[in-house]
Length: 66
Image 1 (cartoon, rainbow, N blue to C red):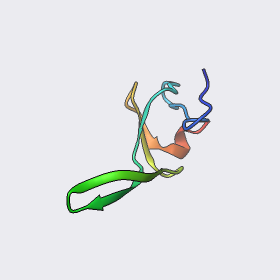
Image 2: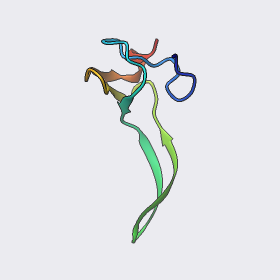
Image 3: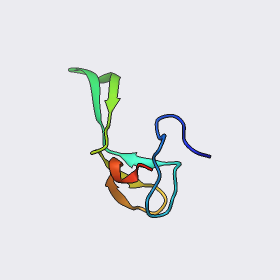
Image 4: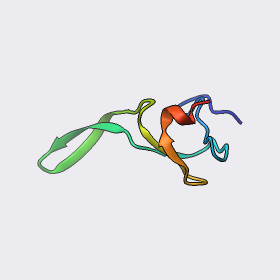
């Protein structure tokens, strides 16, 4: 089934898998001396590193966009 949310238009160019990826993103957290709290945003774009969780193929999101 095609993705229609966060992974819309994303598929592995090597094996075609479209269900699960590891994407390196930037996250913004509330941090105090006691540690991290809630996050207020996670951002990734077409130049973010991505890896297919099925076959291990790696690249950038732009290369995984159908």
